[in-house]
Each structure stands twice: as C-alpha cells, then as structure tokens.
Length: 353
Ligand code: F0G
Image (cartoon, rainbow, N blue to C red; front, side):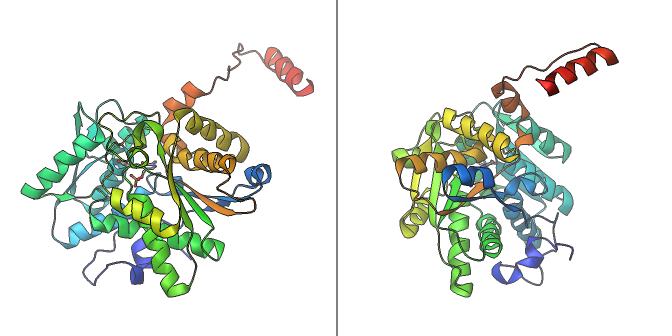
C-alpha cells in the first residue's frame, strides 16, 4: 500500500475535519531500527526511531503538516516561525506545497548549512537576527498576535498533535510501548508530544506507557538547572535553547511517567554521534544523538536496567549538518595521482595488510 501520510492515516487521532486540506509530503511511517550491535554491547534491547527519514529530514514534518493544514483550513495565507533550522525547513516545505508564504526567523550563524539550504530552496522569506532562538521566538510570538500570519512553532497546539503520531508508530512497530523512550529536549515540544501520543494510544489500544527519558545539552539545560539560560551554547545547534516553551509539559511527562530529564555534555553528544555512525551505520545530526548519549550515560549510572527495551528518537538526518561531521572526524583521506598502477598497488597493500 502506498503510505497516505499522517493526516490520512491517523485521522481518528487528529483534530481533522471535512474541511482540513489533504496536505501531505508522505511524512511519517519512519523506520524503527534495531540497533543490534549496540544492544549486544550494552546488554539492552535498543531501537532507534529514524525521524531523519521524513521528507525534509526531521521529525518536524509530523507537526508541520498538521499546523500548515489547519492554517490553510482557517484561511491563513502566511505562516511564521522562529527556528534553530529544522522547523524552518519543514515550515518552508509545507508552505510551498500548500501554496502559502513562509517567513522564518533564525539565529544568525547558528543554523546548520543543510537546513539553511532547505529553507532557501523551498522559497521561505528568511530573517536572520543577531540573537538566539529564544529571542527569535519571543519576536514571532508577538508579531503573530498583531499581524495576519499564523505562528507554527510548537506553541501552536496542532504541532504537538502531529508529532504525537510518532509514539503511535513506535507502539505499532514494537507491539507495545517500550520500557524507556529516550529523546533529545530543546524547546521541549517533542517530549510532550510523544507523552501525549503514548497516553492516548494506551487508552484506546492498551499499548502501555514508557518512562520518558529526556536529554538537554549541558550548555542549554534550563529544565535540569531549573532556570532559563540566557546564553545557551552547544555543538548541537538544533537544541541550543535556553527557555523551552513547553517546559511545564515536559516536566509533567517526566513526573507522570516516572522518568528523568538530564543533561549530556557536548563531548558525550559527539561520542554518541560517531559511535552510532560507525557501529550501526546510522548518521543522525548531533542534537539527535543526545538521546543515544543519554542512554549510554544512564546505563553507566544504573537507571537503565539490563534487558530493558529502549527506543531512542533520532530526530534529524546527519546530512543536515555536514560541517560538524567533517570537523569531528579526523580521518586522513589518501590522495594519489590519476595513475592506475599506483592506485592498484596502494589498494592491494591495504587489502593484504
Ligand atoms: N532534535 C532536533 C534535530 C531538533 O531540530 C530539535 C528542535 C530537537 C531535537 C528538540 O525538539 O524542541 O521539540 O524539544 N528543533 C527546533 C527547530 C527548535 O527550530 O528546528 P524540541
């Protein structure tokens, strides 16, 4: 069967009406990959939800298809968002598909190259500010109150509605909820959306509930520290956020599920980033790897018992941020002249070594 996209597939779980346009780029239905090598090494059953397989390469497509469809349904002709990159890529793509305008406000110099290229290609109007995500979000929230433009950041409730579908997929793919759901936390929308999805699916299908394990980057760990961070900093630019909009919902997800929200350092994130690619053949962007870094950390600290069934959400594709990858991997490429004999001799030497 050709996958119909989220709105068509999950309409009984989503706030759709007869008037909601059938918008889709065939988002959702992403793979849940068993990380067999890491599972063996770690003594747990570890799976990854590959959200980088969505049409624009991140989980944001799930929320954006709903937010843009509902904006169009309400008669809006323009959308606006602040973004660390992925939200803006998704907003721009779905606006292009729906034939409406997208205006995006981003922190100058802090958006990974692939994400910027996407927003440009999809035809968004791009505003860069000499400030961070939190400041950009305050600005777009204000302007959406006074202008004819729909805010599509995750404070728009349709965003979380769309994003909750990932939890439904995880339950269907595993047969039930996992013991633990490990997830990066930035603006805290996604952890809140997954928890909503797990609860709603459990009510209808008795799929059970996981413990929610959220991970912030140490330099942007507002929830962990219990106070907003005015100048957040981390290599994981996607989660370089100092005052998460869904803070209260994320804390509720942690409390209700008996989970944790902890922080991981940039070096833990980068170690997990490299380990995942080399051990499992999965290239996820640095922020995504906060989930894997968190799993490694919590196995060490004893809060993930051996044998646990753990799903780590890999929120975005590694190709979004090639610069961080290239600067982190110190592999010398071998440069040879265009001479058959030299090349063959070199490779024979490597193979027999
Ligand atoms: N992972 C990636 C790859 C992200 O792009 C984001 C958020 C997160 C994790 C955190 O999710 O905010 O729901 O807690 N990116 C937003 C953006 C902020 O603008 O693209 P969250």
